[in-house]
Amino acid sequence: MCGFLGVIASRPVAPLLCQGLQALQHRGQDSAGIVTVDGPRFPMHHGLGLVRDVYREPEVLARLTGSLGIGHVRYPTIGRGVLDDAQPFLDRRPGVVMAHNGNITNYDELRVELLSRSIHLLSACDVEPVLCLFADALVAARPRGHTLDDVAAALADTARRTEGAFSLVAALQVDGRPTLLAFRDPSGIRPGVLGRSAEGDWAAASESVALDALGFATVGDLPPGELLVLRPGEEPLRRKVTTPAATPCVFEEIYFARPDSVTAGRPVVDRRYALGRRLAREWRERGFACDRVIPIPDTSRPAAVAFAEEVGAPYREGFIKNRYSGRTFIMADQISRADALRVKLNPIRAEFEGHRVVVVDDSIVRGSTVQRILAMVRTQGPREVHLVIHAPPVLHPCYYGIDMSTEEELAARRYAPDPRPGGLTLAEQRDMEGRWAADLAVDSLTFLSVAGLDAALAERRCAACFDGRYPVPVPAEKRDAIARERRGVGSGS
Ligand code: SF4
Image 1 (cartoon, rainbow, N blue to C red):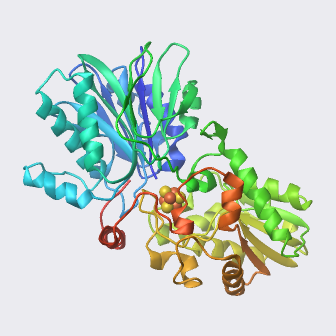
Image 2 (image 1 turned 45 degrees about the horizontal axis):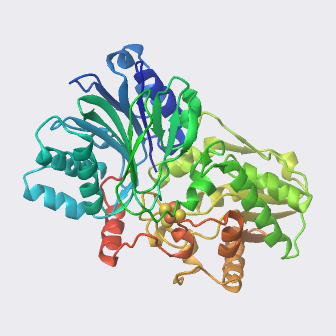
């Protein structure tokens, strides 16, 4: 998971990019980068850490001149972050910058192919070969003075040779004019939105909250399989690149996206309410009762509100979150997650002591965080603890740009070691939950069922980490290669 933002305007864009990237900070805390286009120059600044720290000094932003630019916040799916892997990337010939969110599953093949033509990659970030292919195709079409047709043909060629899931923005001169490009691959797995200001400026971003932060109106999602060509004061030019078969990532709705973002015309928070309501019905059917419903902040709050309404129990804030600590899931290794959690959450004894509490969480991936939280809860003297999760068990790795670990790291695989594609039957899920609840020392554990997820969201989506049905095929040898990289060193986005 990463966040990108591209802006083309009739004013300097660096302050806008900095502002918008801060709204996308939840999508990556490893590094931040901004590259602008100012005539033939590409002023840039990248740094490790948070946007506010990387661009703390006003003179840094002042150097990023130009009314076209792109920015990125990075979260490494593989390995620890290094500055070499910070996006956006620049290709000097013909002069194009690019940033993406996603995972290129044929990265190794592309690297070897590029090397055979003496094109060397300088990072382990998988947007770099995409940029090299695109730049190479442009230069092959003509050395300079690229036209819209050149750009569309180069992007179609790049998309044809690139496997995986990604959304991207790029900035370059087209027909002698500064131009912002936005592209979402045909699967539409990774998100992307288009926004417009009242003055006719354009922005493309991973999430609509970045557009809100700029005061831009959200026009809609980036259309899968289409190239958008954006210039201020003009309507976007649209070029169909490939045939779309959109299956957006359901985990964006469950966890990654901010609740105030809008996807496919609907607020993410509405979908979280729907997940909470459906989970409450499934939980109630098991014959349980409770005195209060407590979310593990922040992501599960909307689902917990809906859960509480549905079961008719009070909603309570039982944990106080230290607002100055980071988001544990997107920290790069187990040690920093454990350290972060100790300062992140503090339980309020009065909300737990003597009560039958339902604790709501969004998902369980590795399982270590929830285990530590439940250990804290048990010290608060509750009468009963029921853990409910507003997603099904994560049984399969993600190969589309989300750090869902390798199979052996997924906690659910310890209780359902060999799941079939399609997900568990309800009986199998209940059996798994019973054994897991005993290990967690809770009175019950209830995940949302796969059928419940489908019913709550009712749109065609990728839910492969839950049901094992991968919408974009990833051959076994590529899955193995990705797993090997994740166990070792390297870098994704
Ligand atoms: S496998 Fe899961 S996390 Fe990955 S894209 Fe699909 S739904 Fe999202």
